[in-house]
Length: 89
Image (tube, rainbow, N blue to C red; front, side, top):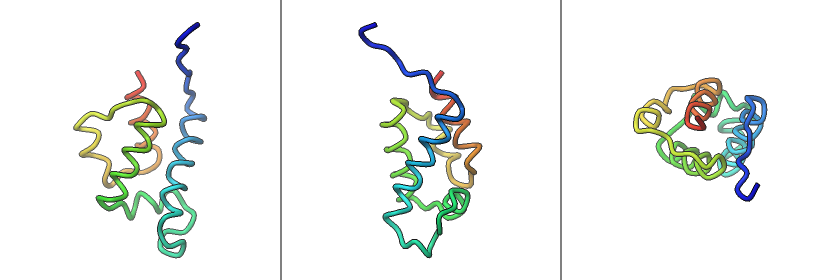
């Protein structure tokens, strides 16, 4: 196949999403959010949302809908993974 598309499982989505989040977390003070991906979602601000969206859309080759973007603040890891999954369909 010339243009094979990658099949994403929930586990691979989670692993890649965690890598993205950890890369964003590295650019901030470690003490500020620690190493917990759930804490990352608790402290999301507009700059982190932009970083998260850009890196995620690039990695998964997706585009979040306006509704998904508006609901990113206040989400948790499971909701974020669900948003990625629904965008992959």
